Image (cartoon, rainbow, N blue to C red; front, side, top):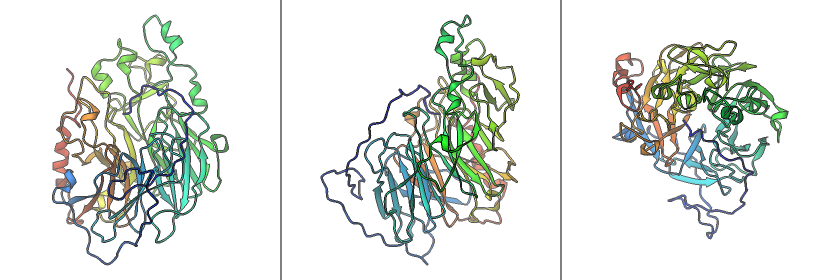
Length: 481
């Protein structure tokens, strides 16, 4: 989970600079002249790419393999794959005007041959996140804007100036990622997450006789943040006042998508932190590590998921009253929407994808893949997460527990701090052939996962190796000390 220490509010300073990047290093070279790059269409009618011998360092279920598309394009957020296989990545950068990366494989070996940085818009913060393709447009988001550009067949880089669809009118703040989702009727959904942990009120905290951190009641942040807004996809320069507040009580959503099978919005929410820090008489260090749940949510219009007044306990499968608002770990909260599943605490689910393809075994069809960015604040217990999980679905509901689908990102088992993890899974995208693409936020490595086994003969026994990985330190629920 992201460090919840609030970032100081500031008005962003926008830099307009002409920057050119070499294909080999992708580093800025402001003195160079622009380089014109030939962009041939990917070749077709060539044998399917093969997985790397070591699967790019990943552990996968039987029959699956992975190859490394590119090793290090720079810290990255979400990604999207076009119908011709071109890949678009949102970079994590706060300055300059080239915040996107485009990649093309020209010989169908699965490796990116053309890597070009682009983006005619100002980068305004390190949590620029969204990258999605919808109806021939490429949509992407900085911290304060949602943009789109028309994709032209045969051209890698979109032409023209990006259109501004949504404007965030508030200053830069924490939890400022703009996740994007699209319904089937022209609706664009954008997250406006809350910048604090539990809407803390320091004036009440200083005077509290029990020494409990207290929350503002009612929480004024909910007037303008802590929710998901719906906009008209065909209108430009919209602010939240032009859209509809679709759902509220949502602390921080980075992964969000529309499930076309059941025609509904889904998201994965970062649960709050610091239960023990805020109310040590009610919560132990172990409670602080394993609670509260990250929430896998099915979202309908006017849903209220209870932030900051509640949190979800996935051991009890109940929504609980937060200690800042009178809770003690035992008081249940009524009248709020529950998630469809509680996920492990502090794992930071940062992307969500419902699988539509036919390449993977049938059990994966319409199921959910979740990229867990990994925890930062589980001390004195080891950090955890840093995997891609799978949740089987039937008719829009989970039909089983979450599974370890891809592991090996950490480079080691026991992590004392987040910095020790080699990679942090971040973005998910499905390719036109049904391959699954994964981005990571530290170096910008991208994996492509394919299934080469017996699709019809895939059985639960093929998952046993991955199930055993739940005993690893960076995945297991720790024992109480």
